[in-house]
Length: 184
Image (cartoon, rainbow, N blue to C red; front, side, top):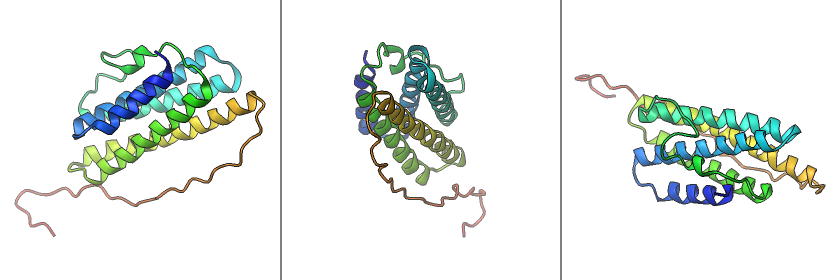
């Protein structure tokens, strides 16, 4: 299946989730899809695109592993795991639109995981989300670099960099409650 279609399916599935385990599972699926895209770039491209693809695959796998620990699935993330959308990736298609949509998916994951972290009832869920957000931010940055490289290779003039405005929140992990101790 073409990458653009899989990415759109992943964005829709993430938007439709309604509980924490499903959100974590969909975020993991999306990270594995980003890993598969990176691996495919390594296999099919050369030079700058292959190098950035390798970095994307590694960062996306790290994000998936963070989410494995949050769900208790420590068997190890794999593109070829059962039920993985990434297994169905057969073609990258046109790189520009695919990378635009992948960047959107990665931003969606980051926003969703920040919301989960803010409402986390355990410290382990909080840190898994924060670690996955960090790895996902690296993936988003790499996808942006890939988009720039694709434009350069196509001979397009570099567009003025769109300034991204990021909301930075200082979050503390959930307080550990001691049974029987009064909460301040």
